[in-house]
Length: 304
Length: 270
Image (tube, rainbow over all chains, first blue to last red; front, top):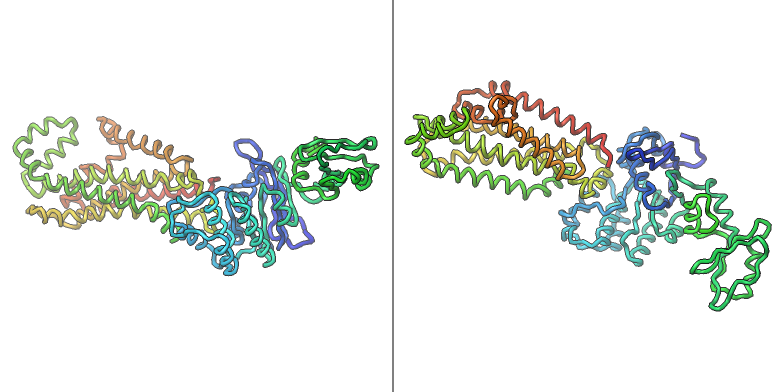
């Protein structure tokens, strides 16, 4: 493993996995620092769940290795599963059991529970635990799965779409629990398609695109280029004023995205639009969705 | 223990129905023995001639034997062990065993199970021993009721616990062989119906071979037929001779299948 300046809780190096000859993960490296919250973003079917499964040893790697903290023997997936609680991406609960039985079964494998989080979850996700799981709705099943995944006192939580099937109110409650877990020093690695939410939960985001993780320096050029963009939403009846030469304009139902040439700072371009009193005028840090789309477009990312 | 408990909750209904079926068949069978015995005594030659194979003729001759005790034992060897254990026991083993891994895969609960901090070998063992008990205990329980039911029906025949226990033990091992075949196949296919088709096909082929003269000796069912159970129930075979003639090999086959299943399960991806 490469030496790191930060204390890494989980390190993966050179992970490769193919299914029936189709590569899903290609020589992928990953490092999650202790206490960090790392978001994983990627289009459907790019291998987010496969990555989680590889980290936990649920799927055998073609190449590469996964290490947990200091002194962990690479390849000891049981050690990783002991230190990590996992929320699968699909509602994979035993529907012939009662909610209480599933909860007890799921938690019985862990030696310690976090009583505070357990209580928080019980209050946030009240469920009819004496009923069979087959009578639960998709949202209720997800709440039960969350109670099982969040309650154990383990250093790492790997959550595959934790906000799936939850209503906006429950999503907000979930975010507050995740924040509390972070305050308690837990490390979170989570995937979600709600990118706006991820922006508020995760301090760092990594993109899984074409079997590789793009993070940090790898996405800096795209991020910098998007930071130069000006996003504007004009009032009804208004149109864009004449723009300096070299500015490319992309129209969207929600407004315009303006790409200035390198010689024109975004604030100067924004100043030209201010007299129109626009509904929205933004530049600087790009929205996660825009960054994700730009990276997904892989080179042809002139516009999100 | 947790996985075994979960497995037990999953299969307890089926196990109870399986036991009930064995018991109902046993009671119904024993009840009709006087009429069958009478018919056989009067028309032994006709019945023997009607039977197409040598082994079926031996069964009829056994049940028509002049000694009432011997005839009754031949009847029990045929009805309880050769028929009920082989048909109902194996059907239960297939139904329960085929779902061991395949149903978890199909219902997508395998990801939840495998992501728990527990070794795959523990998962397999916890499930297997629970299933082993579920298919064998009803055979022992049902066989254990033969003597009380015989007394309740007022039959004067002398039966001993030892031979019945030995026959049950042998029947259980034979059923366990099919349970392990089903569990092994459960790691080979993703859908339980495919596992059932594979194991069912194997059983039908084996039964087919059993009825083909010349090939019969190669069928697995030679290990669990009238010619095996009759000497046991007649008290002509000691426990040691039964063990070294058949049961040791059955045990070795079961262990080999378990090893294969464990190897497959450890290598298996979701």
